[in-house]
Image 1: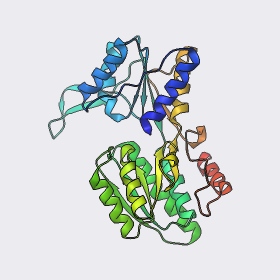
Image 2: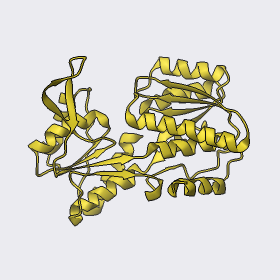
Image 3: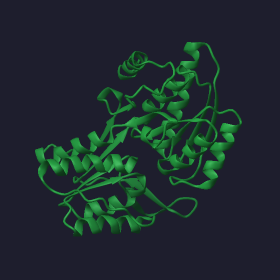
Image 4: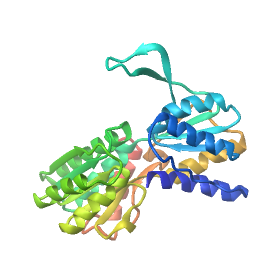
Length: 296
């Protein structure tokens, strides 16, 4: 969902200017693998390279300096470089944020869309919630903390209590053990799980289908995965990437800078399809969304 949303923004821009957008998928993990994928894109003629996810931070930190004529759009991270001569206690190299003028980062206030998802779930009558995160990276952590805060805020408004199961699965890919974890939660009374880890959604969804549970999607609107998905905590990836691409052509590209998108810029939200809620209404959503926009 996350990668696809980012690609759709690039594709929209490419079609608008009459060129082709290519989707390259690294076949493994590791800084060198990601750097090779970037090099492959550039060798094929790419002048704009969109890299979604923190796993690219070191690779982009290297590539941006080696290819000053290529614009890099870093989604959900800031590029890093190794600090020479310094190591962490575990022996790993110390890194620091490092921008060249040909790289711009897009970050989101995921805690706001997480808050909206938690608020909506409790307002819709769910009181036993679960959060299944992927890796405990900043974006996932922000989603989770926001989810807890939104559920708590709604519970206080309704003078009710909620229970929350919370776990980082350590993976962004579907695994049998993640399905087992989600199934155990459902069997023990959890009514709805916020699946916040890309590919783990298919594991959580299968558990929901087998145990009459409900699910909340992430990053993009995942309702088409199954009727069990009642809403999704979203960030407007397509629009963010598209708009950033447009700044390259207009000469307004903010190289060396970070753009942080929140509800105030309509950068985060939940799904605009309210048909799967039992009682939560769109006007209630608009009211809480406006409060977040105004930082109230």
